[in-house]
Amino acid sequence: RIRDIQKLRRRAFYGGFAPNVRREGWKWLLGCYPVNSTRKDREHLLSQKAKEYEAYRRQWESITADQESRFSKFRDRRHRIEKDVIRTDRSIDIFVDDNGDGLQKLYRILLTYSFYNFDLSYCQGMSDLAAPLLVVMEDEVEAFWCFQKLMDLMEPNFHKDQNGMHTQLQTINTLCKDLEPELYDHLERKDCSNFYFCFRWLLIIYKREFGLQDVFRLWEAFWSRVRGQDLHLFVALAILRKHKANIIEEDMEFDSVLKFVNDLSVSPSSSSSSSSSSSSSSSSSSSSSSSSSSSFASASSSSSSSSFSCWPYASQGRMDCLEVLKDADFLSQVESLGCLRPSRTDRLLLHRKLSSE
Image 1 (cartoon, one colour):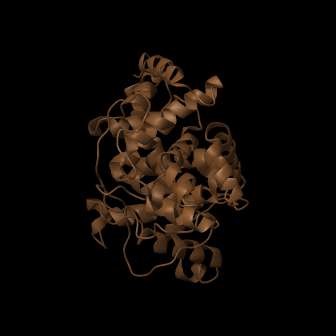
Image 2: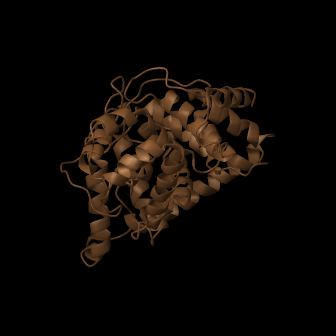
Image 3: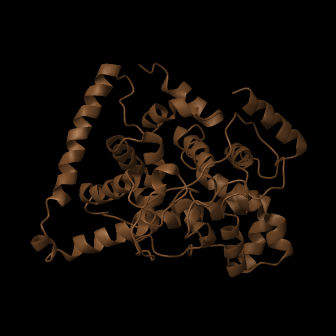
């Protein structure tokens, strides 16, 4: 029984989960388990969820070829999932084999979810979110229900009107204007203040920007909610802030900024998490993907996690997960305190405050 869920959340935020507890830890963070549940309660719940999953899965498995010939929406949905799965990340062991069980599980999870949530169905980018869950959970049923909980949180990102995405981009606009006015002024002059170049970051929560272990670390910090629901927006600002000098000194226009941020994807020490990492930030979240052939997939691994405090970047590397989190944590605290351009004294006081938590 978890007696202090907030302690668990703080552990996830400050240090991340060790590999041997990550599988259970994610279920708690995503809300798969009731807070006061016993081990027996959870075992019973998983048994019930397995039956529910099989019922949803049978809905599409039972469609006959004759029915399918008159079901164009199903054919289109299945085709889009097949195309996305075969080109999602391909460097993890369970997804390497074109005909392997891991790829088949990912395919079934996504197609079953499209029958679980008919209104949303399947949208491009969902395979990027489901693959790490399957890597951690290993079990298809557990991965599906974790994915369902994650999509409950992220569904607005995938609505056709894209209002959820636009709201987040507008929040980044406001944060940048308040906390990094010099960068904001440059972006506004270059007609970049819509921040569409951050679109992919938010859509799949930095899945293609970092190696797999770093993605685990980021997601755990986000799901912990220790800094509220907008930490991922402060991460976007932290990344831009780190590269502010390049953006301003090179007088970048929108296309240049977009190329620049896409080129930041996955640090040199991490292997590529997708062969399609240069997709446009302003593309519709429900558009279909391209590619061909027969296989499915997921990411890479590198780095590890430890607790962190705040300020400033220790290195000038391209994308360092922990340093990004440090700065995002700092910026979120600065914003919450209303201290827009902190002095060295302000930073030291805030550092002390955060370190004591």
